[in-house]
Image (cartoon, rainbow, N blue to C red; front, side, top):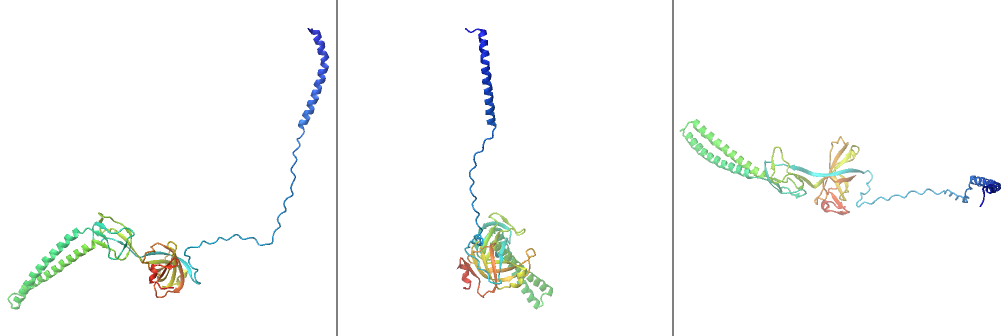
Length: 343
């Protein structure tokens, strides 16, 4: 068992060794700290490659961008001859009319619909005729009564004239018989006029097409009342054979264009190409567009062209032959070309 004096002695002997060990450790820590503060050497940079030599400029001309080929159309307009020009045009109905009734009555039947093709004189709308038939019977009865009065007045006139010749009656009595006779004649004429008006009212109760055309719009139905004043529109009708091509001519080109000049027009909507002549050039200028309208009439028996179609027009300046217009569709003559002169 170790005593306290012995422990102190042991400690005193070990103290120098401990101090030496402590100094050694301290010096070692300072060396490690200096190493930690040294900069870290950078990683070796990769070897630089020599830059590629720049291409030497060539003396050849720069390559042009490839041109975009124009899209071919199915029916292109041929290049206009020298002195010709392109204009815009639009088709319109040769004639158009909004039909209204001539007598006031109830609509009993509408015979057409939108888009129907009708002939001149064809029935379009029928009105109720019962009232007109009664008036017609009344007028015919009045005519019969007027004829009876005329026969009676004629007998009195003949009798009075014979007595006047024998000087059996005074002149005043004959004058009265003559006046009654002339009044009866006027009464018959008036009754005949009433009968004619009744027949006309019956005829007017059926509204008919004034010309060949197409029903553009139907505006009434059965059961509606159609009046004369204010006028009730019944149907709208357009004539499209022939159809008019209205071309806008600038004032600077007016002196070069006269009626009879040839016109070549292409309708993109239908692909048709039309060759026709100008029928007239309107001398009045549109103040808004500063253009003069020129009209060409195009045969359109198959109704392939409708009003409102845009047209690309070429005025060639050539006079048209005496033959009618030529119409081509897809390079082949269409039905309207039957009346056209051959190329």
